Image 1 (tube, rainbow, N blue to C red):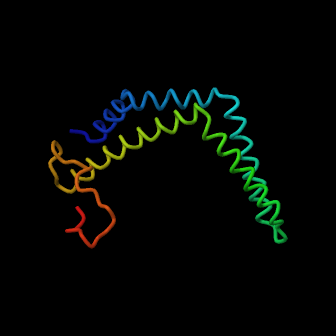
Image 2: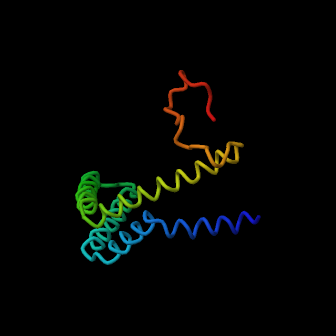
Image 3: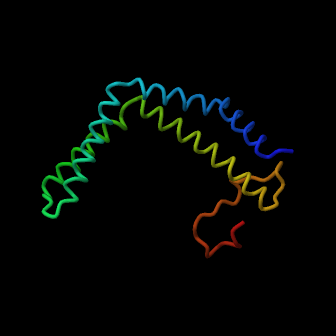
Length: 135
């Protein structure tokens, strides 16, 4: 049994999953959205200008505030774009899928049953006071 080959097969299966396909469609829609790409270009320019001003010894705080406000305005426009919203939602779904896959693999490496282990069971809430120990 070649684990690397099996991993490649898992990668191919992931690329056939509906969540991945939806993510790729959303990515392509973003790439074709000229208005969105123009906004992203403006954000990058504002970010570059901010960094340039911030690096100066005699930086102008008013300019920095103006760049920050402009950045936030542009960022909000980008995030309100319907294509970007679909992309973010699809990316979150793929991220959740990958989190579950890597969680299962991690549990298997720790010796748990590959067919029944659940990476979502007993999730840590961060408060160690009521915990019996991490897995």
